[in-house]
Amino acid sequence: MTRTAEHRYQLIKRMEPLTEENKKLKEAMNLSEKNIQRAQRERDLAESNERDLEYQKGVLSEQLATAKEQLRSKSEQLITASTQLKDASEQLEKLQKVSEEKKRYVRSTKMPHIARYDYFC
Image (cartoon, rainbow, N blue to C red; front, side, top):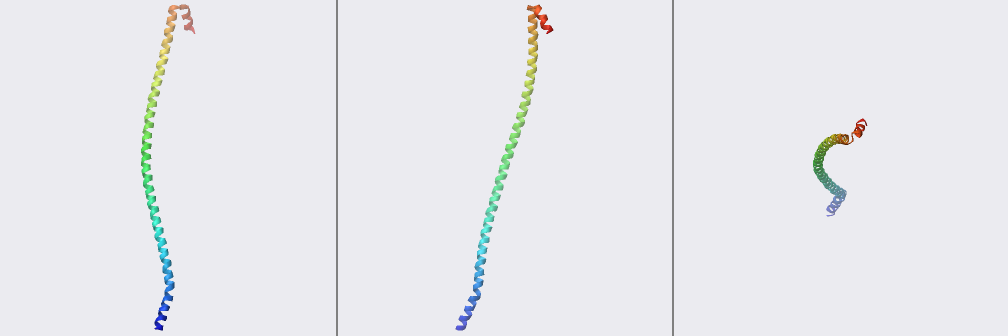
């Protein structure tokens, strides 16, 4: 019996370092699993951020296209308004000339001596 007890004791002694190593390996595996889980969460977050950014890109692209169209439309309106103002200015100049001519005519019929002076000025 002593021999069996001795043999058992020696086996336990030899297994102690293996038990310690096994414990360290389990700790390393647990740490690895936690790192894997953290990496998966980070990957999921990155993918979610990517989807959000793609969505925002689409929204911003639409807004840019709308703003571009509005700017084009405003530019056309400004060109039209500018043309209308130019035409109105030309008409005003013509009306002013006609008005001046009418004034000279009226003066010439009422006061011929002053009218001659206006034509020379």
